[in-house]
Amino acid sequence: MYLTADIGHFIDPVAKTSYRAGITARFLSFIDSLQEKAVNKVIKELDYCILALEGMMNRVEKLNAKQAQGVIENITLAVVRFDKITKNIASFDYFESKEVKDRVKYTQKCLYKIESKLHRKIYREKNISSTPKEFKDGISKLNAVYSS
View 1 (tube, rainbow, N blue to C red):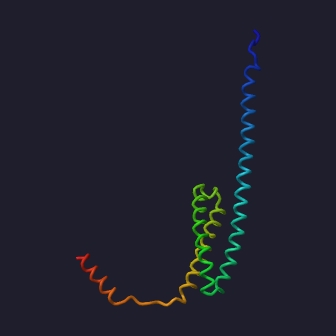
View 2 (cartoon, rainbow, N blue to C red; view 1 turned 45 degrees about the vertical axis):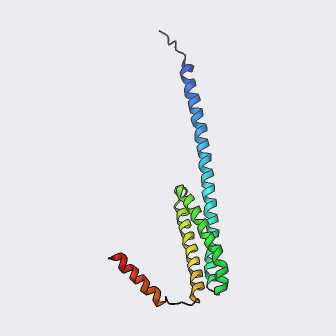
């Protein structure tokens, strides 16, 4: 008795499927390497940003109130912009990288510190005026009316 089946008929689909799987694996490997390069570039850019912000933190101490007033607008815009960037990066789970997450959080912390130091510089020299007695009496009367 002889085997009359065509073995090639069974091998051809395996060959085609394994070839497709190999191409898919190489493609996914390529995508992974692209993602890794992109994440490394983000880390590098965050490092530059952190370095600049740390340098700026030291320079903020030497500013007077007028100079601080000029810088506060830029910092406030930068904080708002970076918060949007952070929200975007967080939506991608910080690219599944703890390094990116740590650097983003530290950058935010530096921005907020600079902003708070500038606010302290600006408002430290402002005169504090007391609330007139008429306003205080009016507020206490309103509180008495609405709380009873």
